[in-house]
Length: 544
Ligand code: NA7
Image 1 (cartoon, rainbow, N blue to C red):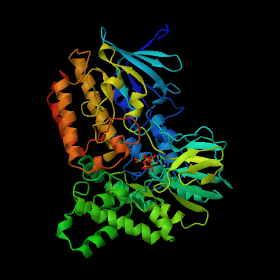
Image 2: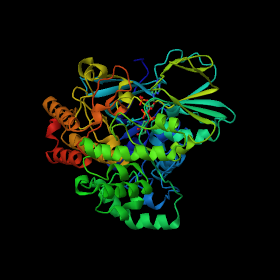
Image 3: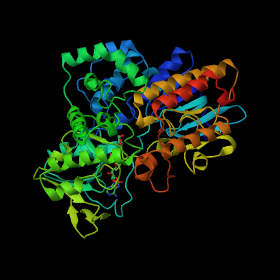
Image 4: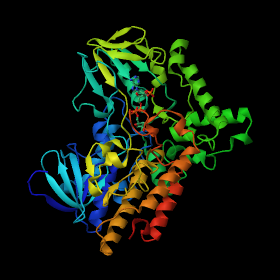
């Protein structure tokens, strides 16, 4: 660390997205001095960067929003059922103004290193621009899906055309008109981008390796009637959300039709009735509406296959060309074990004459040349532009990319070599006063992330306040408590089918990453109950 004098702050929050902004607000309310740093030039977190054509949240806007402030609710109206990237960023910008947060945010400030000073129980934090901070606590509100992942393809740097990654799309307009565009990746980002780019490009090649299960969003513009519906049911729906009964992907606006009919026991219905149930949900649109139709969909093979085959039949009906339909039909892995996508016209895009699906299961991409993409059968796809929709180093990438050193100079890479051990997805033994918002081992993307963030923030604010009141300057989970939590996470995950499929849920998309089911699979309700017990014990688990 250089000699520049460090700025002292009680809490340094990293990240100006949903988690970081609320953390700053909450700490201020408690009279705790806090500062936020962020790489970007404005608030938004992942929504500052994910600006690719078609980018949209897969959770309904009204439920992908803060619930802690009636003032925010009263001053904001969503324009669509599913908000676009731009609208979510505008929302967070509005929140930052309303709560006067910007004066305590330092933009263009990337944390490069942080080391724990054991003598004084402080973190010395280094910012890439040369700034230094000395903070009692560091809170990583760095988001589960923020570090884009490029694929390991030979010759990737040799391509002479333009390349873009969906997770880091340029802020200036990208004109794809008249271009031959290749899209690699068909997860949420790829399936959202394809129908939009299909309308711009002269020719679009979609390189499909593992087709995803995807359901229609059935997005719509919010009318006054929708707004009235939301205002009337807001409290009830948010209570249900907190109680873990809905997560919001597509449920708010169809809740009246779903009431009491979620997680049905598939065995109690005839095949015709089951088909009817799934058809009705398919028409409503949204991931969880379908996901939550039948109980134990991620646990019982038969139930899973029931829903999986339903989606596959839909694909066959939507895509005109049978060869193309086969390429884009998900097969060989269980429904929902890769995150379900929510699309607007993805399958229909393949019926356009300028869109071509390339079967990378049959002939994988082997190389990128100066001219384009080369597959194992020797075909060279000549391109002007390559879009990498190849995902993220999810849930841990934003933490491990910092040179993070805890007690005894132990690095985070050493601590997490066998998997991201921690307690509640919030705190890591050996790294006192360092906290995560929505870290691995928390429900994260398997719950409503905004609601989960609010929960983590409230929990952390209370933990920090309690430690302060008790005069305790170092907080970390006891080793046996952490061990117990990690074992519990593994135990509940083993009951699901998630580990049987390669996905970012298990870190399989990043070579060398320990294979662990990253989000907590025991459900938001059980997770929250455990957190409440920790609070009730006055944080005995943290040795307070
Ligand atoms: P995902 O869901 O991780 O998808 C990445 C896609 O990229 C997936 O289809 C991969 O295929 C594909 N991929 C990666 N490398 C290659 C190569 N070399 N060749 C062909 N295809 C490749 O990322 P997203 O950004 O779409 O979504 C992530 C989350 O963000 C999403 O779940 C939402 O929660 C929001 P594979 O499956 O590995 O065969």
